[in-house]
Image 1 (cartoon, one colour):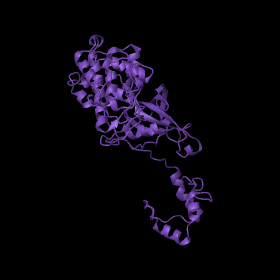
Image 2 (tube, helix red, strand yellow; image 1 turned 90 degrees about the vertical axis):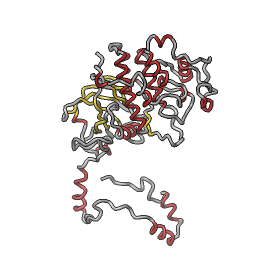
Image 3 (tube, one colour; image 1 turned 30 degrees about the horizontal axis):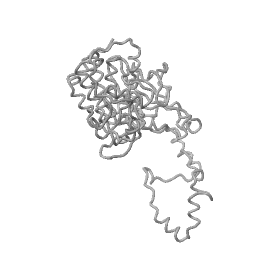
Image 4 (cartoon, helix red, strand yellow; image 1 turned 180 degrees about the vertical axis):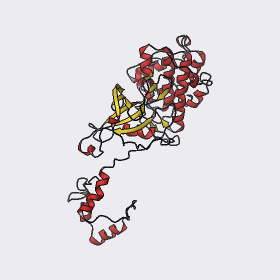
Length: 401
């Protein structure tokens, strides 16, 4: 039971906005105002008699103090296998083995669930430095992941706290932990290590799984907006999972409203965002996946620049310079006339360096995923129907050594 200090929130007292308004109102008008106010909705158990004495009130309040709040339930489409409510368990139910990375808003730990006996990843959400309470990126990720249920999207199992009693958060800000299924690697780490060799079949398997997950997201009307190799997880069975939905958002194709432009890590950012587009589409995620397709073959990011103009220059060398001839609407973008490449490049994606590295079927998909004009860029669904991915069965593909 939390006390509501009305005066603290400016609802009472001589300086509050309510008091200022009331003082100027005649008594008759005030009575009329109060009679027009709607009654509050009836709550379950509202017809029960309220305790009269102080002792009765203590008895009524005491059971509620021991009850932990139910934060939220499992993902959409999942059936509850256990009776554990999200937020009910404490982090001491896990044996933390060590730190395995840094997330958007805190460390990520490898841990073992003592009850289930399985490995999990704990993403820590600290509240110490949050002036506005729970981080908005964490709220967004939780809200979106609860609505996504796909084999190629990371599964968030539950949320746990570091306090036995939820009321302890009032005295001492603690931390929440998002509990995810454990994945052994991320794609960036494997590519940088140079210790694992990916064959063409492995790349087909990875891209098939990635595009299936992305196609599912887009059909659920979500944009990921941060696809890169470090956000693509891989286990030792060769399964791919798309992770880190902290920048994701709901997308409505029927409304033409602006979204924030500064999304997607620079190396994987499409040309429309570099040129200032705010009314973008799911094509931005497809561009990022096209960059990953090239990276899987070349073993390094294909566009590596440290600022936006240099990034656009690199893209122009491979995909041609953005111009009305290949992209009619480019002249409407805010930075088209200010961010001009040093020279105009023709479309040369089929240059000899890529022909030596990327097979023809993959190069054709690469071409369609990196189309400059987002309206001509292939969708995730169309990518799955390409010659490179159409007949791939990743369930029968042996994992890399």
